[in-house]
Length: 157
Image 1 (spheres, rainbow, N blue to C red):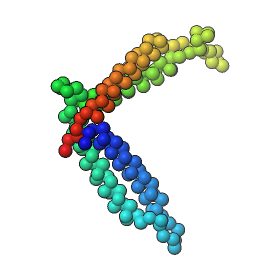
Image 2 (cartoon, rainbow, N blue to C red):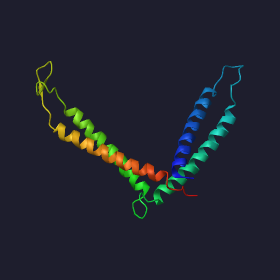
Image 3 (cartoon, rainbow, N blue to C red):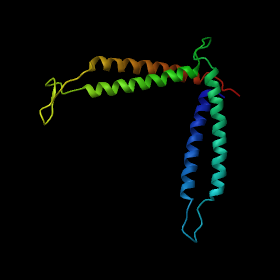
Image 4 (tube, rainbow, N blue to C red):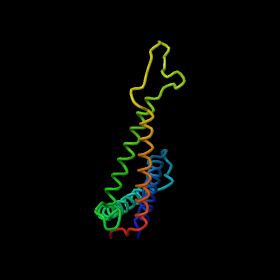
């Protein structure tokens, strides 16, 4: 099985677990004299089995990510590429937030509140926006490499 297939199965398993949890909550209590629409014990058994399957699949996916190179013949692994991608997303979000906080009314060049307090940016918003764009591009390129490898790599047995 390819890693991409395993990732799809993992997502489906998580969705199944979420649905089972909802069904369990719905059937955890009934009015006296009524019966639940589904047996909670059966649902608990299904939930347990689904969680065990997810655990086994997650272990295989993680083992694959730790050992599979992002590029054949290189030392960097998929796990390292995923961590790098996550850090790029984190950095991009933080810089984007700072850039947005530094934006002011461009028509006047400064902002005045009702109490006549003037505000001015302390950061170069344009430079930060360019940095955000560069990080977004780097993220997309790395994500594309990761997704491509997911369809090439066989999952660890």
